[in-house]
Length: 161
Image (cartoon, rainbow, N blue to C red; front, side, top):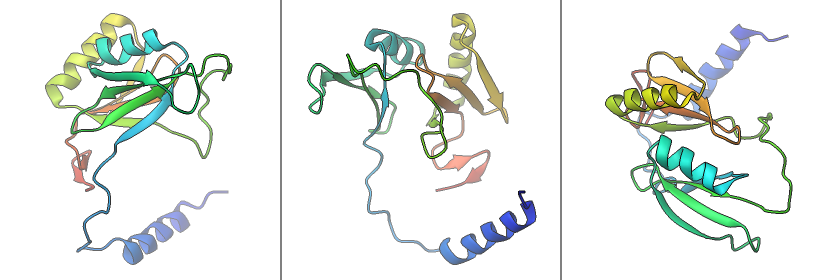
């Protein structure tokens, strides 16, 4: 049985022990790319480039699997969302599992958020809105995405960076 009070107490302990007012700069420069799977390269390009307006920046052969494509979309600030297809492997449909990818949240400005919501409506893509700033949807292979109208480093009006 879940004990919400015990979970809250543990969260408070973790914050107290590990969250510092003055913290060093990160050793990372940013997210180079996150890689997802695509069962249909052209369908994925149409979805991410044409519908969501993330420009395709490159498509090359996957160095780890001959005949497979590795392709990239610009999601702003020098960050990329990448995909692999693995022809012949029959990977099956996307499955959200514990310990696996839950969703990818991508920040867009509020006017873009509204425009993309209109494009999703026009294309008949189902989605769910939360808190007036998040749109949750699934890509053509079932991966869950969040389009977040909050600035980078903020979530629902709270600074997280």
